[in-house]
Image (tube, rainbow, N blue to C red; front, side, top):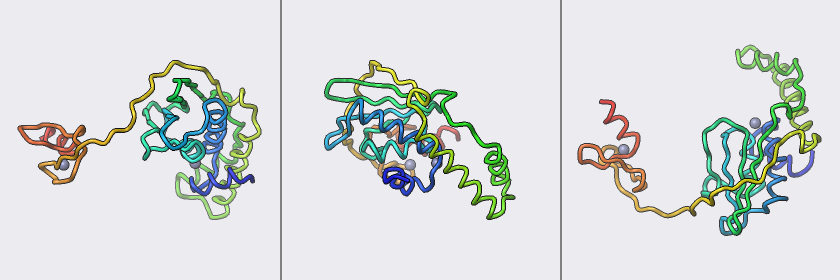
Length: 198
Ligand SMILES: [Zn+2]
Ligand SMILES: [Zn+2]
């Protein structure tokens, strides 16, 4: 197993096809858009919050905490990478028929794991098959895995530091832009939602 795959596996906690799909997408982005370095030059918009995103964060340097990884909860394996300097952007979307063939044994074992009835041996076998499938992704041609298109994308605003306000219900410090007014009080979103439901 090569060093990149090993590193991503350590970060993610296991090796699955999702994570290797993420590795392949990150490689395309690094080639076509370039790496993210010190000053937020690259932004990625991910339309899923699944395994692949861990590989993308680790390999491209676009991370949630830096504000240059934006999650849209659309449930699609689609990743749009945008270069700030010239607005060059690509959208990488995984093809429905791009994933490697699944082994029926893996699916049977997965069902048993979900039911909590898999033995230790069965669990071990499941992870063997899972890793096999993950590694198969690394050998598939790019054009089978993804559609890659140049797109026109708006360059997202840079992360800004906002003032903090104390929620008048839970007393927790909250970013000013997330405070909601209710009955003349400043509330954080969870407290606002509770107050509204009352
Ligand atoms: Zn995973
Ligand atoms: Zn609150």
